[in-house]
Length: 231
Image (cartoon, rainbow, N blue to C red; front, top):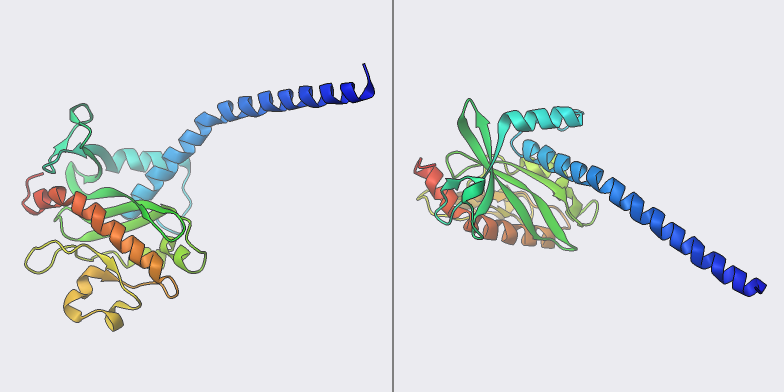
C-alpha cells in the first residue's frame, strides 16, 4: 500500500472514530441537557412570581423543591376553564398556577414572541384577579447586549409588576412597552398599561409589545374566568 493510500485510510478511520465518539457523547449528555432545560424553566417560572431572589444562589434541589411546593402545571380549554392533562386537546393552552394553601395566587403564561434578532422566551404572571400583572421573566433571547438585551435585567422586568391589562371599564388593552419613560411618553390615563422602554431598543419594545398582546389575547378567556371568580 502506498504512503498516500495509508494516509487516506488513516484519515477515514480517524473521522469514523471521532464521529462515533461525538455521537456517544451527545447521546450520553442528552439526559443532562434535558434536566438543565427543565431546571431553567422551573427557575424562571418561580422568578416570575417572586419565589426566588435575584441575588441569591439556589441549588437544583432547592429549585425543584420550591417548584413542587408552589407551582401546579395545568391546561385550559377554549373557554378558559382549567382542565387536567388527560383532558387536553390540540387547542388546549398550558398554564402554570402559583398555589398557596390550595388557593391560586396567580397564573403564569409561557411567552414566546419575535424579537429584533430572534425569539424572546419567558413567563408572564397574572394575579388571580385576571387583570394585574404580578411578574415577568426572560430566559432566552438574541437581543443586542446593553440595548434590547436589557429585557432580561431585573430593572426592566420589575416594571411589569402591578401593571393592568384591562382599562377602568374592564376592557382588554394588554400591556405594552413605551418608547421611553412611561411618565414622559404616555398619557396619564394609559400609564397603568405601559412599562418603561429601553433607550436605543425601540424595535425590541415594539416586537415584545406585539407578542404580549397576541399571547394575552389568546389567554383572555382564562383571564375572564378569573375576573368572574369561575376558575
